[in-house]
Length: 70
Image (cartoon, rainbow, N blue to C red; front, side, top):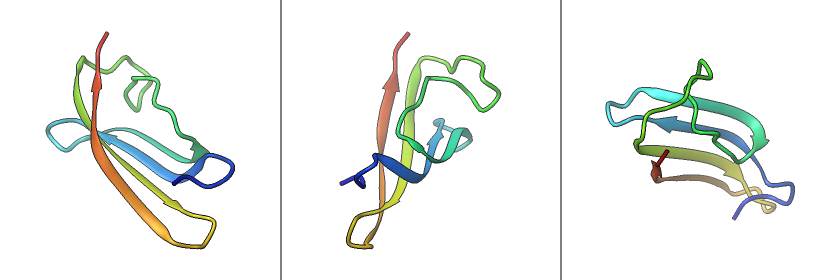
């Protein structure tokens, strides 16, 4: 579903309390398991939100869980 250059408009990662722990714009889809300040995030389950537009101009917002294990 991602566009040809594998970039998203935005990607956010939230902890179980709803606090955003990671954010990126117009970049490759990856999360190094760090918080916004660059410190390592705790082992836990997080929620991601990816927003992008496909090659036909359709906007998508995908959400789901991701578990970080150290």
